Image 1 (spheres, rainbow, N blue to C red):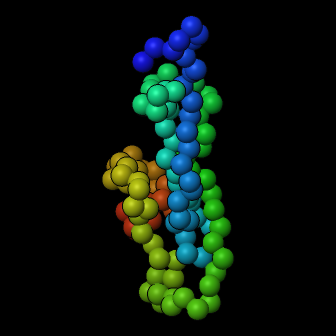
Image 2: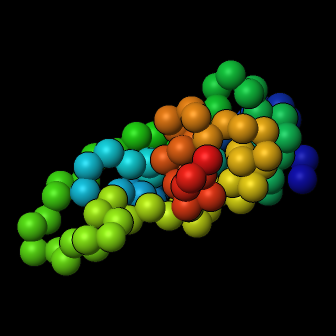
Length: 111
């Protein structure tokens, strides 16, 4: 689509809303989608990478005493469902790094 008599506005980073915190109690991670969009709303690859907003951040959930506690696993160790790289974390021995251990808790268990 051409812009009349002037240059088209540059593409912009567009961030979605933050998702749910990965932890039910205490510190976790929350994620959101971040896309580069042209003025037409179509995806673009021309946004400046250094201006890209964060797609993940640390979050803190209030501990709700009414929630049942899993006595075998009180922290509910699981891989964050939106993270597909957990097998690679294990393969490249990144489980000793706190961020990856948290995001890929189930995969990293015992390693």
